Length: 137
Image (tube, rainbow, N blue to C red; front, side):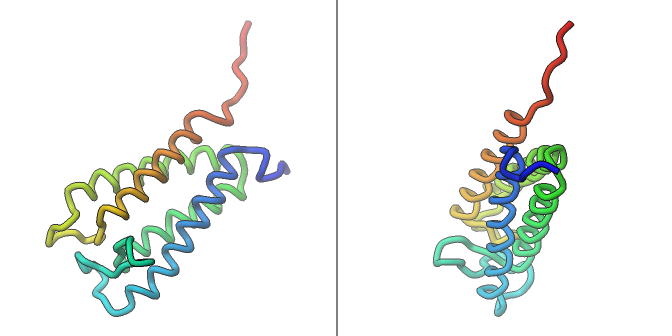
């Protein structure tokens, strides 16, 4: 079995997955007094708006990335692409949800920035690294 550090996808999935697990877990501490889909949520470190639904999403995405990172290069490459796409879609949705009564994820500008930056990193690594060697005749 190869080392996790031998693949950019595995390292990226490990680091970003760990961050999302931490955000999801810490988010439950700050959102304990708000409803599950509260449109305003509570602020993590005074900046990122969260509610319990968004915490669950962060935990699921973080766990998926960590499991894929530990499973191998191919799994990590697929996970960085899939989770990157999900975060990109969440960021786009957040542009329309922010400051609305139907903002079930409680996203604000800081959360959108986090989602877009994570998506860009995951997609860049997932689409641009760890490619199989091309076979030329």
